[in-house]
Image (tube, rainbow, N blue to C red; front, top):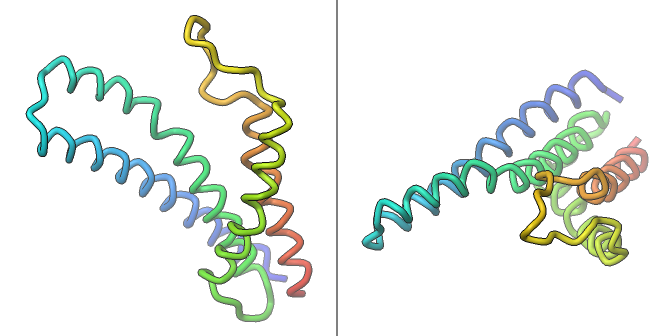
Length: 141
């Protein structure tokens, strides 16, 4: 197993995933401004919303891309990145849905200030794809 190569690939893929999530969400917001006649108050609201709205998708994308890159490039044999990403995604999404259905996270009420992510939400985001990626890596060795 080539851990150094896997970690470098995971770091690069995670960075690319976070940046791409930010760019996609920003493009959707700015594209909406161009296509519709928006007022200054709407643009101000969108700008404030954008300051925190991209964080959770960026974390999710970077987790999946980073784990797929690690599972692909840390293995001694050749496996495709896209195939590894698809396996991790399609196996871990039902596991994530199951963990989310257990309602481990407090419900978000508008009158209460909530953190961007609760620790239980971080665990729900990280654990299923991590388990799948490491089981996949172990099966490839």
